[in-house]
Length: 316
Image 1 (cartoon, rainbow, N blue to C red):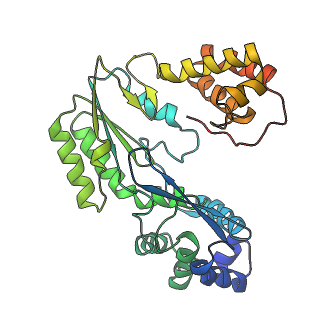
Image 2 (cartoon, helix red, strand yellow):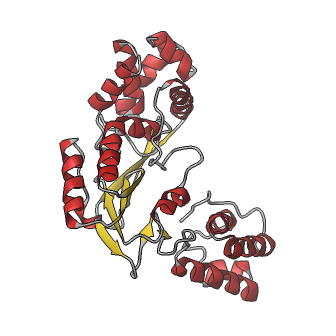
Image 3 (cartoon, one colour):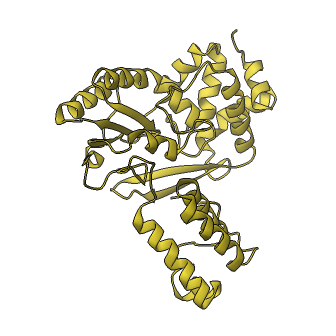
């Protein structure tokens, strides 16, 4: 089945006229249709995040729901980012107690996906030329896939599918475990420098760039972390000790001095450790290590006053 501009408008939940107005307005819509924010990456460089405003945010969410139901995309078993029922925990669980863990990161993953690539993918999914052109205008900003739009996660997985298959085939042929969480690639087993070079070549041939500064070999007996979780034990991933120590320290301070004092005098406000964020961290820890996380969750729920809801959940 092919999708026309009328079908696209129905999927977006607006009229064709409004859809075309929105698509033509986005190139100059900064401030009115979306907010652009920048933050500095931990390992250098700048990350741009776009926050859509009404009515762009509604259209973006509607399109994402439609794309999810209409696309023929089925996430491979090794893909754990933006896939229902999978998470950083399921991702890390595939690399427990391995001789060596190799972490490789893609350079500027979302922005490296351009409008032409997305249009080709939409055409393959059955969108007519005009519908694909307008859809591309609605899911890109500045000709690139942006971080922050509801449609970006699914489209990034769709575009990366052929590379996913190539990497999975290579890993299987070499007897390695392989997972991908967004732009974070992890291989484990008897990993060598040859594997790293081969993987970089596969990615380069497919048009992707490896962030060599974040490539790391983690061998048994030393720190082995996958998507932020320790994987050196065979019985399951673990929350890093530094995180557990920090959360226990926060609980100690709040228990002894009170939440308001913790926020004002012990750095809580500077770090944005409001109620929802504290509960979010405790929930995440409980999902990984229940015996650690649930006591934290109960204690924070009792000690931190309700109504202090300035921050959304911000998981580690």
